[in-house]
Each structure stands twice: as structure tokens, then as C-alpha cells.
Image (cartoon, rainbow, N blue to C red; front, top):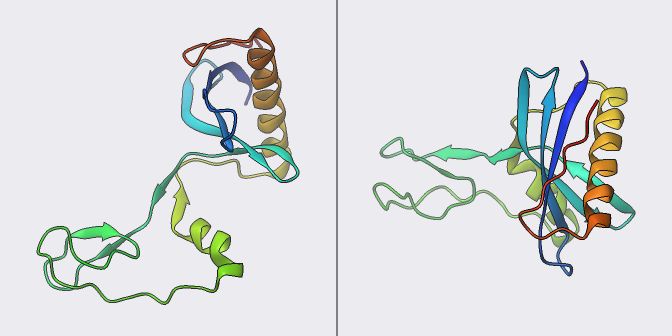
Length: 138
């Protein structure tokens, strides 16, 4: 599978960890949107698109966000999940989200991250505005 297009949408807040959103096209046939470029403690990395995990209300069956105190449908109190200690807070945040799409192999993840970060650096070097985008040909 080849990456045929990478579009970078820079975020306009230099003090935040989220640097850009990226759309990647594979084989001119499949698109993955909302890949994030994030500034971590050891440099830039990508985060795949994800969604929040839901919990079902035992009274009405409505799906609420995990760790909600009350049901958004019937307003009944939801069972409380234990909160982890602060050292485990980042792990807990990861457990509350599930990737929508993600690479299966480490080698493809590295290839994808390399191509995305190259496109990000090119876009950043251009000094584009928030709505700027770059297409990186194959």
C-alpha cells in the first residue's frame, strides 16, 4: 500500500501540543482524515483518528460518554467507574478512546509517520496560514 497524497492543515496555536491535522490518501483509493500531529516530550508524533468509548445507561439503554455521572437521555445516575491515580491519568485518557483506523505493523506505522512528519515540516517551512495545505506527491 502506497501513500499517494498527504494534506496538512496547520493549527494556529504555537503554545498547544496539537500542531496539525492531516488527511492521507492511500493508492488513490482510500482516505483517512483527522490524523493528528502532536508535540510530545520527545518530539513530534502522529495520533490516529479515534472516538470516545461509550457506556450504556442501565435504566434506558442510552449510550453516554465513559465516566459521565448522569444519563443524557433519562438523567438517572450512572454507575461510577473508579478514577485512577494521577500517575496513571494519561493511561486512563488513552483507555477512554479507541482508534477508528490504525496501522497493523510497526514498519507501516513508521513509514506513515515519516511521510506525515515530512509533509508537516514542508508546510511549516512555507509559513502557511491556518487553512494552508500541502500535497506531497508519491
